[in-house]
Image (cartoon, rainbow, N blue to C red; front, top):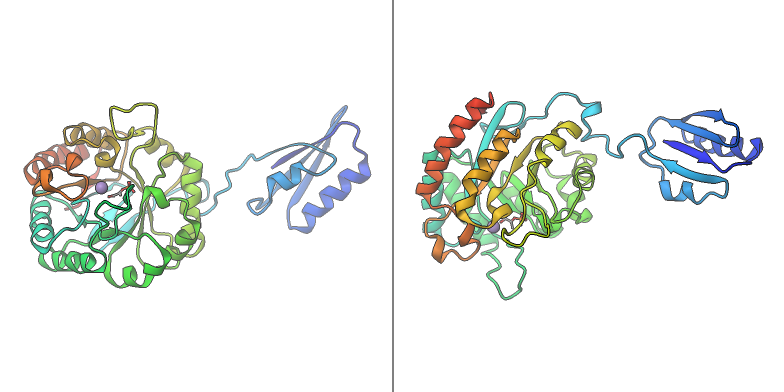
Length: 339
Ligand code: PEP
Ligand code: MN
């Protein structure tokens, strides 16, 4: 961190400020220019409040030169993190596809879709039991019975299950029943929830918020990791832009940028990004080309009658066709597709 002092600040004030930072365990270098002095702080400055420092009477300006995240930072952990879920592996050359319906609707639906997506090469099964819906009058998910149906589907297929947690009060339930805990876009900055899942033993799939920056997103991963859970998978699911043709806009740039900033694996969700089934395939392939470590795809056995997100859901046949291209594209990118 660099602190530029106001012109004319006396040596006494500068030394007093430097001493305060030294007391906090930081190294402080002082450079005296012609009209102003600059303090260079070296060490762990992540707990310093930049706004408070800027409010000090003799301080002109404060700049961070290091990112505020440590555990998720590639600088301090140059090798890729691999998240293991059963025999599935996500990251560092291992690529997985998570597939399934937006929401669990019935035993027949989830078992049928699970068997279909497994046959086509999915490594994990998704399905929402608790749904974050824009309207309180829309289908809210089956709740706990929905998680039990996912367990039946896991039993029938061997696929680990991924499901969204909506509130801290469900932590014990999810710890017991699911294999990967999803934090949805709307909860990306629900810090209480992030801290709670940070104490869980299960990997966390952290979706990017609708309008959040890369740094905010990684800081949310940092919340989870700082509580001890380092198994975080980031998921780019499209962001809000001025464009209304698509549901959201898949930010393909996020994939290489996140890979540069962090060692955590990143997957893409083309289904929620575009909102239309015909666009899922090109976006999925674009994400692989950009370096994604996996995909999460909505698949439904009867999309026109789906209780949630039918318009963006692939049929099992469409998913099967996509998986053939995913196989070719992952091979082209030198990745191992785990099925
Ligand atoms: C979902 O995965 O069904 C979902 C609600 O996703 P998001 O949080 O990205 O909108
Ligand atoms: Mn959905």
